[in-house]
Length: 366
Image 1 (spheres, rainbow, N blue to C red):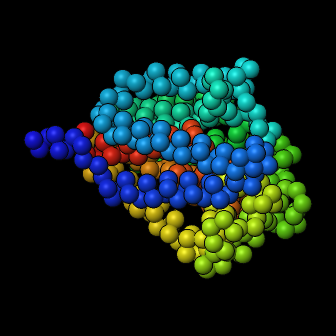
Image 2: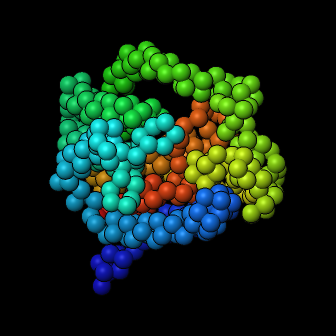
Image 3: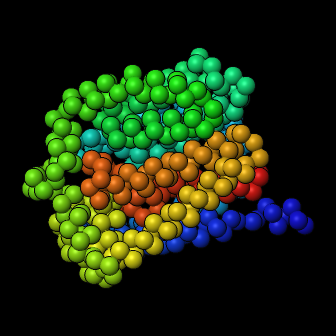
């Protein structure tokens, strides 16, 4: 009887904050996108209905992953890696890739689009956890604990740079370094490689004119209010207008064809304008609960594989939150990255909800 109860137990300390975020996201997606949807599709609820459907699928993914034993992912590591490489390669090198904003980052399967980087991030976390947990006694050796994992990262990064998606490549890099550090890879190996790769990263950033403009606009967005700094300027205006209490849900001004992509990359700006500082703090508090619970699950995991998977999934969520919020507040250069559980988008919401299910399973010791 006890085992049956345990099998259906859900971690409410993790589940409730996530469901709150998803619910707030559905409301804010409608508020942020209704004018745009009415103009483009003649239906102000176009994005709302889709986001609600994505949320339903996301909840199903969460439930399924909660009940799949996390150790069952071990034999799936290499098939998932192969699928990730194939999907990343298909974006720039086949007609299945979908371009938007000057970059091809989506893959069209039937009538659906999804971002392969979501699958790549999930499979990379599983691979690193699986490989490092097997090599615990030799993880501090350069050729064992460092080289094989960085080679896989280089493959993923190469495909992402072709798209081009420099921001996602940097995110995978940071995620890999965090997992390697937690697993016990020598700090000197991580720092030395970072210093060696830094010139190449600077070269890549400066090799494209649009990236140089992004950096210049990041340093002073108000000097480029009509072009490169346009998004950040209007994002900051939204936060400023919101004040402490906000203008009220649906009463925001910047979403009315001033702030580009208000329901995806810049939904946090809409939240800041309509819910104010109080709403922003509440969102931050919910994310804190999710990330803190993820850290506790990693610390209490039954084995090193589960611990490293939990570290990777939690770090991935935390990095996405920090980067998206940093961009909207003008603290980081502009990067097209969604805000977990809040932004409009099917593949992002689906994989993030699945990640929460996996974390719950690890927390249950399954």
